[in-house]
Length: 216
Image (tube, rainbow, N blue to C red; front, side, top):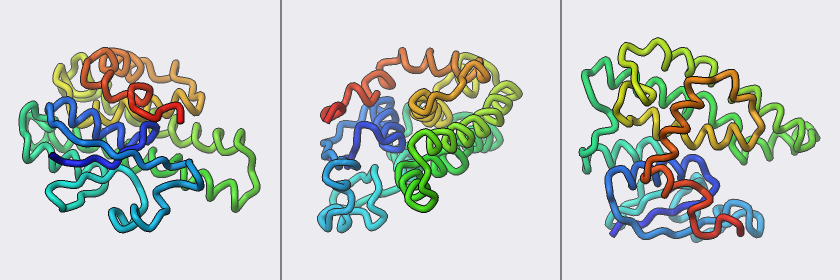
């Protein structure tokens, strides 16, 4: 059985949990607490697993895969049903672009280690760091709202009526947006999609509050 190195509150790990649930892939879970005792990810034992000292990581028969999108695309290739990248080459490019708007442009700038470095370098407090995060989340969501609204396939989710990679990334980022107190009334389409997705069993089961150690 595969082993997922996980942290309940990590949005990158949240994405992988959703994909695993959608594809009904069983995994053993090992929690790597990113805040406990200075962060368990910094311990030599975990650095030997992932030199980046980030979660998630997925151990597949002794081979460790890192980076949430790479892990999800591995799952897509090895467990193709249901497909998270359906349709034509152009459809898949649009879906990937939506996903990367989150994974490449929004998430890295409001990640825990970035915010901790921001506070250490500038002396700003938590309120100012939250304002920094809100700025980048809302800026990215403005573009994503437009991408979804203008997509050639319209429906219940980000790209038509089928759950795709874009939806897998949207829900964890919406969770972050609520944590950073973003004004989500600016993004009615994303908010409606997020509500529908969170009602699906695969998304509900993957939610941070459903994970062991969430309150630790």
